[in-house]
Length: 433
Image (cartoon, rainbow, N blue to C red):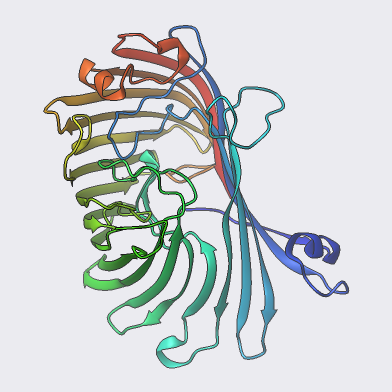
């Protein structure tokens, strides 16, 4: 749940920021965003380190985020017609920094860090131009976050076909809302499949198309509804940069149940070849299949207690895997919160990740984070801003180190170490508006 703040900018600012054509008018601009940043240190005396199991699709994030990250979005109504039609523009810029200095230039650097300033969204949506089943539909075109589904406690976007495209959403199909989008992916960097498993390297210049179709809001029981999605993907195998690219598909079924002041989501997904990433386009010439079961619970049974819980089990099949390629990934964890008052909360996060590698070994990672002092804007799991003081304790096995090709922790203090445990203490702020 995000709170949105509106501000009014004069026409000169709109001309500069949004290229409005009329200098004689002013228009309301929505300013929304997200930010997280913090400081910390580890038990070996260096900077904060973070813990993630090799081959896992995500990590549990409380007290386990070492970067500064933010998203800043502006949105404006470019046109409003007397017939109820509206043309709306949205632009979002995102940034990532490592927090290593007072003045920190953004952009990929020689030290291998991924500092960047990036265009995340840039799209126009049109509403109010249809009738009948199209009355509430939105026609859109551009780069956008497209109907993303995530587990917040893991920062895990398990259903996420975002990027450049064109589509229509919220078509009234009687039993629910129908959404269709045509998306194009053009890889300009070397990437790794978000589902783990096959490392899809040397993707520069490769491209593909996806047709994403979803039916949501199907009422099946009191307080419960279903959503189905089919994503058909075609690799541009005739492109000189993309010889032999496989096409594929991804299918998702999800049931959402309102419960105890929150929700429970049960999700089943399967992706094949180009759809095996269950997110970004999976550029593969050899094939891959991913199957995932996910349980996600967020509840607030009383005014003083909130809980986040998730369970993920994922199976990845690739031909000719390496010994450290992930075969199965299982993750389970919970984040209970006790709200002492409107602005003071104590929370903890406990998690276990296990990855079975194709070489036969199994890596494991256990993490416990205690955040006894959390100052926040209200009760409930989604209340933000939130300022936290935390201590994180993690332990892992030697198989996890072997899969990482050294030590599971990438920090220089752990380089060459055979350590199988680590600790960090620190403070972090997270906000959205």
